[in-house]
Length: 249
Image 1: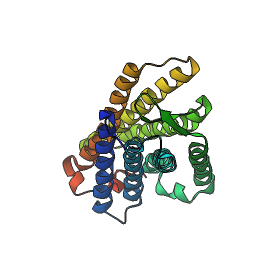
Image 2: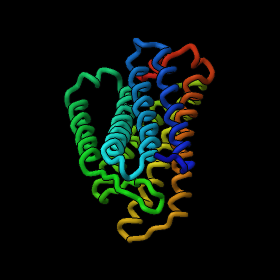
Image 3: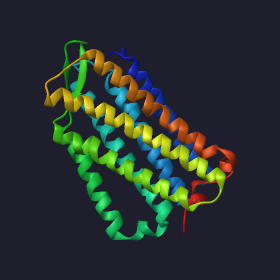
Image 4: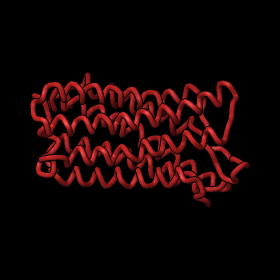
C-alpha cells in the first residue's frame, strides 16, 4: 500500500474535520431534527472524504478491498448531498415536509439509484504509472455520482439563501452565509474533479500535471468546507443554540 499523493492527506484531514463537525453539531441538541439532519449530512460527507483518501492507499493487487472502499466513498457522498438538501429545504419550508410522502419518497428513490449506479458502474483500475490504482467512470455514470449530488447541493444553497432572506438576526445571517460558502466549496470541488474526468475520457486527453493540480484544488475546497460550516455553527450565539432555531415557520 502507498500514500504518496498529498491530495490524499487533504481528503483525510477534510474527512476527519467533517466527522468532528457532525459530532459537535449533534451534541448540541440531540432532540432537534434539523441538528440531526445537518450532523448526519456532515458525517456522511466526512466518511466519503475519508474513504476516498483510503481508497488510494491500496496497490493494484488489493482489488477486492479497494472496490469496497470506493463504493463506501461514492455512496456516502451521494447520501450526504441528499441530506444537505433535505436539511436546507425543511429549514425553510418546515419539518412537516418530512412526513409528506410526495417529498420524501422521490428523494429516497433517486438517492438509492445514485448509490446503486456508483456501486455497480464506478470502477477502480490499475495505474501502472504510479504502481497503484485510479478510478474511472463513463460520462453517464458521472451524472449520477457527481451531477445529481451537485444539483442537490445547489438546490440546498438556494434554500439556505431563501432562509437567510427571511431572518432578521445578523448572527443567523452570518451563520447561514458560512453554510452557503462551505457547500459552495463542495460544489466547486466536485465540478473541478468531475470536469477533468469528463475531458480526459471524452477527448482522450491526459495530463498528470493538470490532474494533480486540479486534485489539489478540489481537495482543498472539500477540506475547507466543514471547517467553515463549523465556524458558522458556532459563530456568535451558536455555541448555545441549535440549528433548529434557524428554521422558518
